[in-house]
Amino acid sequence: MNRGNDPNPFDDEEPEVNPFSQGAGKSRMPNVVASTLGFGRKHDATVDIPLDNMNDSRKKEKELSTWEADLDRRERDIKRREAAVAGAGVPVDDKNWPPFFPLIHHDIANEIPVHAQRLQYFAFASWLGIVLCLVFNVIAVTICWIRGGGVKIFFLAIIYALMGVPLSYVLWYRPLYRAVRTDSALKFGWFFLFYLIHIGFCILAAIAPPIVFQGRSLTGILAAIDVFSDHVMVGIFYLLGFGLFCLESLLSLWVLQKVYAYFRGNK
Image (cartoon, rainbow, N blue to C red; front, side):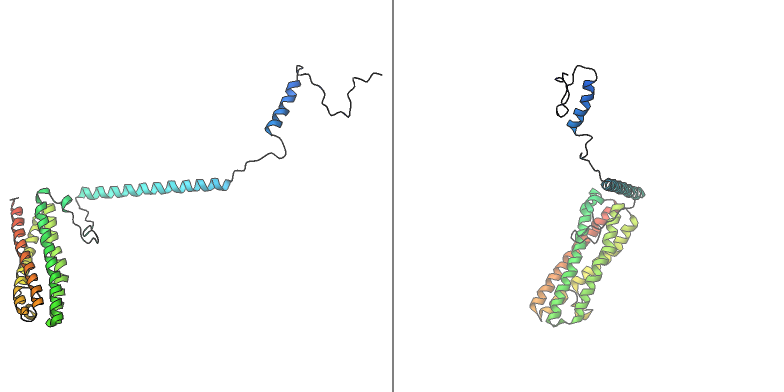
């Protein structure tokens, strides 16, 4: 028997396949593609997508959206309140002066009419002037007390300063500020009443008559003459205080005249 054409069963070679025969290419190509791309094998690489990270990102996104919505709501609420206040004509008096430690609201440039700003600045200088006079009065009286003038005049000087500074602002400067801003006749009348009392106090302090404790609790001219006989340096301080009270009195009289002219319409 002729077995020359029989295939060897122990031969590893694959049988020849005719590429032009039907069905030959179709059966071969899927295996080639699968082996090339690595699909369908036991040790194929897998991609794990952690569900916890996805949940956390969604939770953070939701919290961020809630926070933004809350901010928008608050901003709309603030704008609505500001619009209501502006519509009602109620000024928002936020504290802004002095800049390093705000205690009062003061904004002449933005709240006072342009034609009245110069007058308001002079009135403000008058208020700063009485503050300076009372502070310097405390310094001069303290020196007099150290030199043997007695502790009673020191306490009186402290009382003048602690009461005079806030009362002068509340009783006549703030009413004038609001009167000029709102053109209120009632506030102008309040200002005139207490500003006249302020001027009377300045004149009394500049004279310092010997009424209370020989008048040494105020740095006036009579007190300066009295202390000069005991201590020259204390007398010099009292003379400086007398000069400050004189300047404050003159400035206050000028401001009173200008405010009255403004009130009468002679702007």
